[in-house]
Image 1 (cartoon, helix red, strand yellow):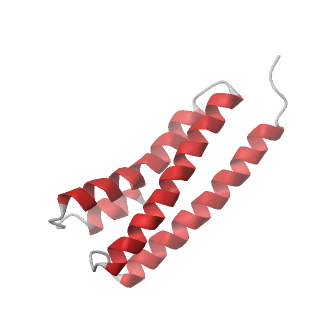
Image 2 (cartoon, rainbow, N blue to C red):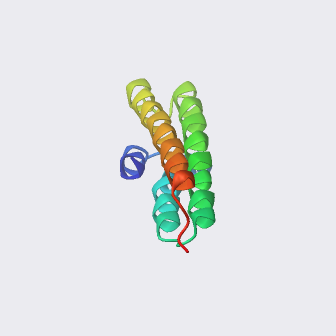
Length: 104
């Protein structure tokens, strides 16, 4: 999704909006990857929470982008749906990690 955001907004001249939404989109997979490389459950969960925050931020910015005409409605709706799916998946992953017994 992050790559799609970069491609779709490549010609956008509002650099502030473009920077903010692309950073949020890129932050989601980056924090998941970084968190899953951590050994402690606490650290893994912390990075998943950051990814969830970025997904929520991205969805909000997408709604705004649609409203102001920067993002085509169908594209934006797809991004929002995907970000909500990611939020659900991240929530489930967090629950799974919390339920795992800690290594001794």
